[in-house]
Length: 301
Image (cartoon, one colour):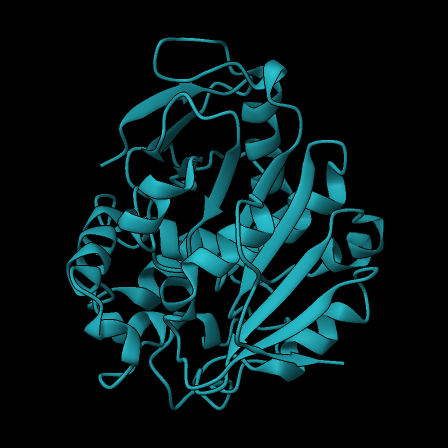
């Protein structure tokens, strides 16, 4: 469950969790996949040693965050604006240092969360100075779009679907399984100590309101208008894909790179859906430069 709950100007509650160093001068926002909830750290040992304050948020319908009401927008842009509101308006406390002192932030998006990360960088370029997107399928481009895979990122949606009808469609699941994230049983990332347990906890927390969070994500993804704003991104952007990812690949990265000025597509040899954890240190090197280089991946030119 999220560590804290803040109230947005709309009156909705937004749950968030923190990891890493709470007094670090560098803030990184992590946008979780579908399904998922705040509190997941791709590699706590690396995060704790890096000297960053890592925040993750429960999107509406997940964890303790308030579901969307009748007048609320179910769009990628609206989820990006929720994060921007936090960055712009959070107040200093003993546990959460003022954003006013920190300047722009780094953003990481995994899977579906990559769409929110890119939208945040496009709509609020003054707030975001570095972006890393990991395993994010371009709209309607997932390798599992044929419907044979279990990953929710690949679930086909009708353009007229509502949150209520999507909840009904999802009923019975279960969706709190690794394969709902597109993680295959032989993914090399599952060998990392504690990673499988952290994923399971994230999935359990995502289900506190049933399928409501998943349904909200899927309905939000129906509208791809947010992609028309990608040209406004000014932050250096890495688009990272495991060569063995069953959901998304470098072709998705090139789709985004053709729209994001100066973006680099990076392939991680041998990595699957869990590239976000297997190269977490290299991801942090990009969004929170510290030491070393992005390393041993294959860069697409």
